[in-house]
Amino acid sequence: MNATPPVSRPPFDPELSSVLPEIRKALPGFSAETLPQMRQAMDDGLPGVEPPDLTAGGRVTVEERNVPGPDGAPDVTLLILRPAQATAHLGAIYHIHGGGMIVGNRTTGIETFLPYAADGLATVVSVEYRLAPENPHPAPVEDCYAGLVWTAQHAAELGIDPDKLMVAGTSAGGGLAAATALLARDRQYPALSHQVLVCPMLDDRGVTPSSQMLEDDGVWDRNDNLFGWSALLGESRGGDDVSPYAAPARAEDLSGLPRTYLDCGSSETFRDEILDYAHRLSVAGVSVDLHMWGGGFHGFDGMVPHASLSRASSAVRDDFIRRALQPRGPAAQQL
Image (tube, rainbow, N blue to C red):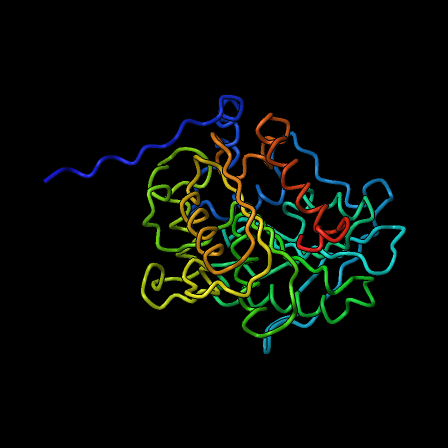
C-alpha cells in the first residue's frame, strides 16, 4: 500500500513573504486563551496601519442605527456610509466583516468598500453581528440577514436602487455573505444582484488538501480554522447535520443565487473549498468570476496592500464592483 503523500504548500509570493513574520507576530494563533488578546488586536488594527477616515475627507456621511434583530434577539447595529452628495437610486453594498466568526466589528475591513461611497457610486451598510463562541450559530448569520432585510425595506429612505443590492464580505464575512445570500434566496427576500466573496470561509469539515497544508504557517492555519469553526458550531462541527446557513459549502442546491465574485490565494487554507464552490455555482447556472492569486496567503491584499500581487488582486475586484454598480450599456446589464 502506498503511503499518502504529504500535502505541499505552494510557495508564498516573495514580496508578501517578507512581511509575513511581522503579521504573524501581531496575530498569533487563535485559542481560548488568546481570544481576548486577538479581539483587542483586531480592534486596534495592524501595527503602523492607520484606521480609515470613514468620512473620506468629508465626501461620506457616517451614521449608525440600531435596527430590529432576529425574533427574540437584541437589535443589530448598522454602520451606514453614504455619499455626501447622495442621489437617489444608488447601488448598495451590504458589508459583513471578517474575523473567523470570533473577532472583528462593523469597521473591520470597511476600507475595502469605503471608496464606493466616497466616489458617489454606492451606499455601504456594514453590519455588527454577534460573535462566537458566546453566540454560536445561528446568531451571526441571522443578525446579518436581519440587517439585510432592514436595508432592503428602507431602500427608498437610503436612496438605494433595490435592483442593485449586493452582499459582500471577506474571510468569515465572505462565508456569512454566502450564507446570507442562501437565506435571502430561500426566504424569497430580498433579491440580490451580486455576492462578492473575498477569500470566504465556507466549509467546516477541514478535509481538503489546502485545509491541511498550513501548520504554524501563513495566516489562518488549520488550527485557527478548527478553533473558529468549533466556536461557531461546537460539537456538531464536521458532523452530518451542519446547516448550509452555517457552512455554505454544505448547500446541495446552489441554483438561483446572484452573480458571484470569488477570490483566494493559492497558499491559503480556504483555497480548495473556494474553488469547489465556484465550480458548483457554475454547474448550477450561476455566473461566476473566480480569481486565484499565485503565492497569496489568506487576506494578503488587505494586510499588504502595496505589494504588486495585492494591487493586481484589488484592481480586478474593484473593476468588477464598479461595473456592477454602474452598468454601461445593454451588455453590462448582465453584470
